[in-house]
Length: 268
Length: 312
Image 1 (spheres, chains in turn cyan, red):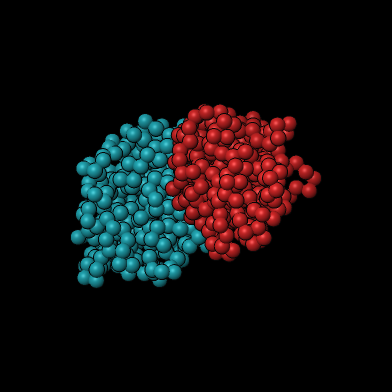
Image 2: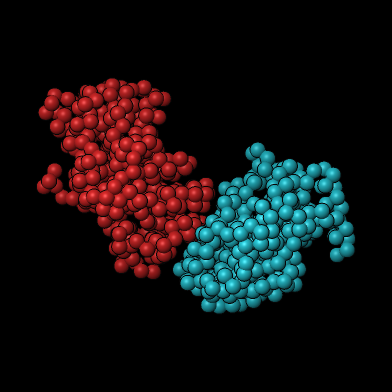
């Protein structure tokens, strides 16, 4: 399924002639795992008050989330090529008024985690059993507000909150180690009283499954899953290329990318 | 107005929250380490389980309020106007305004009447900032009665609100049996024929004082209280402007982008009328007792009177 999500990312960003394929592809596996395995959700009842929540704090990777939601049945797959088009229900960054399954508007980095904390806090205050997940970029955690939210979540022991960091090591201006390194990421979340789970390969479903199980079962502190991923994963010419952060594939590149994914699909 | 009862509207805010707490179960109050000053401490005492102190982290507080609102809570997020509208502007815009969430921002310590803390804490820009956010309702009550009514209206009306309160005790001017608060409706407090004074917040009482002084000079001033800055009661202001032909705006806010700006925009499109904007004249404030500052910056009755007189 993650491969189908990857195809959806290429289809939508190619059609939009814009968007952020690199970070969408690095997170394609976690989107897939969350919506197909982990979360208690019902695509037919996207506003169910008891559903698990997901906030895409790294909102620019909406194409990955949209592809997962479409494949999960929140809306038809043929919405994907409308991404970023005037009048489309698939805005460049997630917008809950437009898209079924979106739990909060995001796009301006650093804000989604606070909203997720609010959702988790609400569950605690009202004895609700749903869990809240939020996905952040490794560049995104350079935003100071992330640490305001982390401090609050750790202090409040929000063990119904799972923060995921997509550690693909690249941000717009270059490798995160050459821009304003947030490393060590795990130690930082530990210092903010999180239960930290390091995932060596966040593009590996089995490793993701183990990490989310551990997070779900850990009580007394919020969990932070720091997962190493490959930006552009699955599309040969995009992998680990900083230049593919916010650029869409042209027709030729689209054909090569889809062929790459077809090959991966056949091998599965 | 020296013998009139005076109450700071931040006090009204805290009391109104505590009152509403027993009526509205999903009302929660957030603060950023200022519960004593914003008066949300009154709510905290009554409903400790529904009070959330976010620490000195206003941006995070606005985001948490947004997340809680998506789940059905009615969060009142409280801090000083400077931090609510200034520091947290982009979170208010993107996490609350854009998804049009049911978050109420209780902004206290607005304007120069903050007093001794000085310019760093005297927010004269919040109305201008908040006005630019689509769908944001903005209320700047004139006294205790109106402030309590505004909090109730906000709690019972869906959508994002920005409520502006002051630190300084101001005269209670709306304590009458027929007082009625309606979002978006200005209140004609005094009829006149020569000039219209459109006032908001603590300048409403001052405008009434000024109108009294102007009357002694033979100038008949109409006084309109605009508690809702957005949506603005354009009809009431335009009708009065048509009658008097001269409009003065009075506010404890920059003359740029607040009530003065809103009234000029409305009149330019309806009844083009000469306007005098009374407010903080594109300068930063300074330390001093609130009463002295209001006098120095000509926002008290005498200051408004002098400026209107000179302009007429």
